[in-house]
Image 1 (spheres, rainbow, N blue to C red):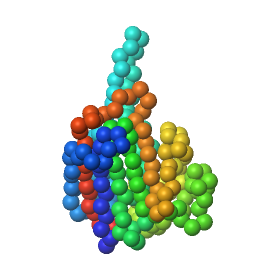
Image 2 (image 1 turned 135 degrees about the horizontal axis):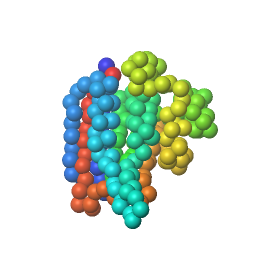
Image 3 (image 1 turned 90 degrees about the vertical axis):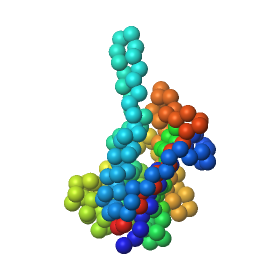
Image 4 (image 1 turned 90 degrees about the horizontal axis):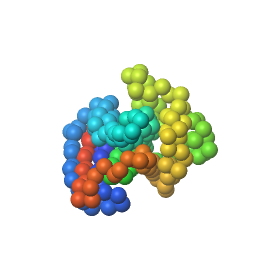
Length: 188
């Protein structure tokens, strides 16, 4: 079994030094770790409300469907051969998700953005599909693009980073003096 460490870091803007909270969720299966990350992000994806003279406007910090797709894709398509786990950083103004590995051989960035799916971990994909956590239709990236566009993806040497800013009109969620970090360990 490959150990998996998924980290949730909470920072203020570009600083990566002021830690507020560091959570370890223990060694567990990837399925349990995935659900724990999804639950933690859902908890922190608060709803901001604006009362106007005509209506009440509720807005989530991040699009929950896009964030769910990004989290699950980062876990399923992560390259575990080097034992580098996906990482989840939450800043006061954005979420960053980093997945190890390049695009699979034969998959261009253009194909990636069009929803072509080449599962890196076929058995893991099958298990997630059997548990109805994924559809395996190549619909995850297009769902992300509906809310955030191509600019949220950064293709680095050995990593793919997704950056999701908070929704427009929603003030940053953490003051400069607060930062939280958490870790989730699991086994594939």
